[in-house]
Image (tube, rainbow, N blue to C red; front, top):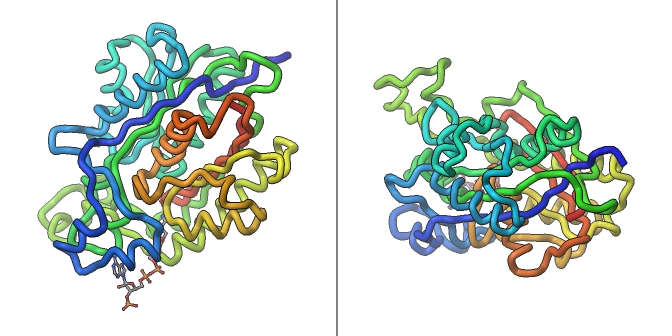
Length: 328
Ligand code: UT7
């Protein structure tokens, strides 16, 4: 058998501080009823000042290593999917290898917003299956609450902080493995969802700060529409490439951006609620971290077990999108 990459284990971490919809009601013109019915979100985790994204990434990585039975010394590459890294540069992955005590190992960030984990999964798969590396630590880690305008009810209520990680290596048997991956992007819609200030298009200046361009900007309705279309298509293509049907998939983990988006995709494939892994009520949208957090949590709860067939799909700013079929 030629080499096949597989997820060997997963871990996650969310900061201790929890902000409920009721808490937000106290300082913003919004309410629990609107947030719950429009998004499915009830609470989100908030990182502290002085607790950067790399701290969450390292904790998730340590849990993933423990759960996969892989020693950190065996890791030969670290990938971090994030758009809310510690610094503009260098990469958060670079900070992570130092904090993990594995300096020398190659490390790099992937910037594909909410579909970053699937870009990372595909990259890790290619490195493993080509034989370049044997064990890769892939982390999705974000702190969107630090780049949100907490006076803008259209965006701030939607996001939370957290990290999820997986160890990817060679499959240990004939069944296990990443059976298919699919990625796409369309750069004509970058302005629909972005953090416009602070890069080279709009370098930090008083004007940029006054216009609040350092915060998340989103045209929600258009993003919602694209999310349903592209996540559905990505899932369909990934299933086709793997030669499996929706009935054969044990659990679907769709990017947790809005419960209504998840329900629309599930409806398209006639997937019953019990086959959906949903934790959006607890974490809100943690961007690149939603899929690995949901995976690790469901594995910890004993819901997802060895042998289960999983479907992933996501859409992120850009737009970027992707899907995957994985047997654990
Ligand atoms: O991870 C990347 C992908 N991200 C997403 O997929 C997010 C996709 N977008 C969405 O989930 C939805 O667009 C939202 C949940 C963000 C918004 O739902 P919507 O149906 O697009 O609502 P809207 O933005 O058009 O707002 C409808 C109304 C407006 O009031 P008026 O103008 O009709 O009087 C808003 O001002 O709801 C109001 N509104 C709120 N009310 C209470 C917007 N945000 C809030 C809020 N609380 N937090």
